[in-house]
Length: 254
Image (tube, rainbow, N blue to C red):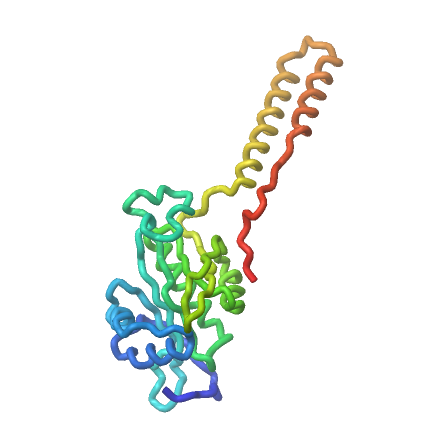
């Protein structure tokens, strides 16, 4: 593959990855990732064996390489109850029909970065996941020191939901991983303790307001001071509620 500096205006289009992309796909993976992928992985990608993929090409690229991929994303459909985030879905992940899309790899040739190619590839995955009625989300791992990737997925509205210690083992050293999720088709994580407390307090306040309204409306024969007394009691009860904020409920991404 030629190391090309873009001296022209690129015309980017997207298509599925095919067998003729095998060599270039392996080359870009080697350039982008610190780990080596088995040849079986690439064969599965180019032949569509349980893996869906999209490739980006520059239609305005010269030297007969106009259909050579310069970016890619690979993903797999998995069962929710067999995934790492099945326990974090609000939906019933124990049902065999619930699914998720797991992003395996995403990369763009260095000279074509910062052109919105990675964002478009991710949107293709999200669109694919959204088209599957049983799918509840798209998820992936990011190594803890990859700050540009962490920033990118946050910008794409993925949620960092978990930190996995010693997830990667590269060149004899362990590295943590962050787990990111983008929910689709109504999928979302269960309510956090803070959300639960907030919902309960809101319902109690609304209920107390409803009681106060009924007392005011129906007890017309009561003296004015009695109504004020009831209202004051309700106000005191409402104001005495405390919202407890759980510690460590968020995911720290650095």
